[in-house]
View 1 (cartoon, helix red, strand yellow):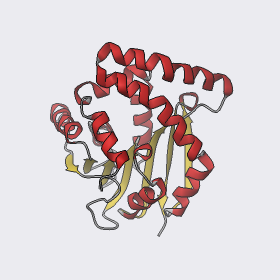
View 2: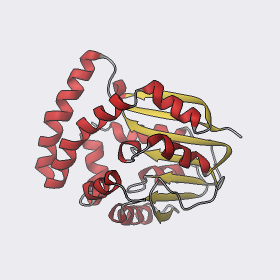
View 3: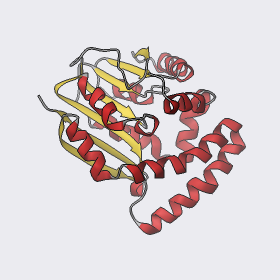
View 4: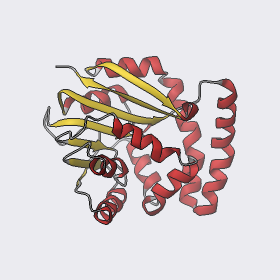
Length: 236
């Protein structure tokens, strides 16, 4: 399903694959890899099959396999350049990951196909987050875990002021030192994250999860609220 938001995401990420993991760690002061590890830790050990949606360079998929949380992993993303980089990195790491080029809003799998699903930084790029969450839950078997990592806005006013200054000023300038592509990402991220949280505050997001058939829903803010991990099990 191609929409203005998904097409914008494709353009935004087209020039980033080779530097994506490194810049993600640098711009987050090393927090992004830690958040991803915590996301993976929400999966039961030796989960038979995991679908990693919005996989990008397959950082989460690779971590899930390396850590023993997943016996079999499928990495799905709508960006062919990002998936190609994911294939290269998976081979370099010596981990077994399958790759699928597709969008999250219409997954090319039958219902109850996977034992768990992880998803990273997705919901700001879809037209209907509630519908997308229902689609993600659809392909998980009853009792299987759905776990998500998203950027957050710090709830503390002092930290929020610093976060806003960093995302509006420092990130674009840091991106410009690397490439025009990263400059565009640096300018985009702060307003995009804040706009998403304005439209979908945490209470509404958690209700969307419940409406999608995931209950109870657990959540944890990480790094003073700069990120948030939400997870739960699909009900029968």
